[in-house]
Image 1 (spheres, rainbow, N blue to C red):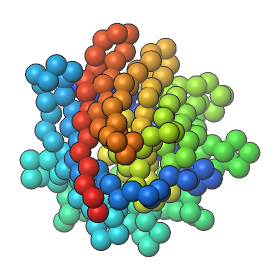
Image 2: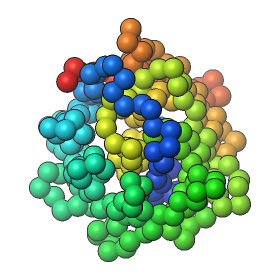
Image 3: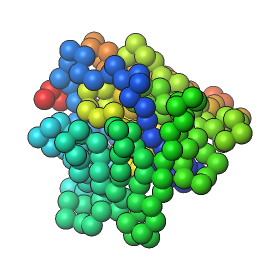
Image 4: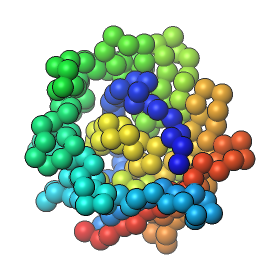
Length: 235
């Protein structure tokens, strides 16, 4: 399946506000157990990505074909503090927080630390010395602008339904999806559309009786971009 956007390559990182966080554990113990990406006619199917959780129900790792794709560690507030390519591998990124908000990250391989600045007036985060600023909707990425206010990306969600990460803890949960490059697949609320400059991607979603996302068919200009499938488990 084609990548919808390469947001990580463009901005590297964003951060989130806890101002609108009303999404955690609203009467359900369903957690994402696996997801996959395939063609709309079922003739092509990617490997299935399995989700492993720690004792606090934080996502500990993503696994495919018995190989760890990403592994994660958290602090006592369920904030992601490091990401690696395996349980015993050195961290690739580490993350810092101030007053519950992400305030920077370090690329361990290069030794480069990037500061994240939060603007109380605009409710936006500015990424280091770049010209990118990020706004969130709840715990999901809402918009990506340049500092002159030009909109680059807009992410739309169905606030009445539950996305794949609905019950996963953490106000800064989106950092995991962004750095893992799963941001277009995994969110707290189901994504219904993405605007990327002049291009628009639409997601036609299917839900289970509890309102959890089970299938998302992605199209742009009437052309299929693939189908996402989600499986859940009770924890």
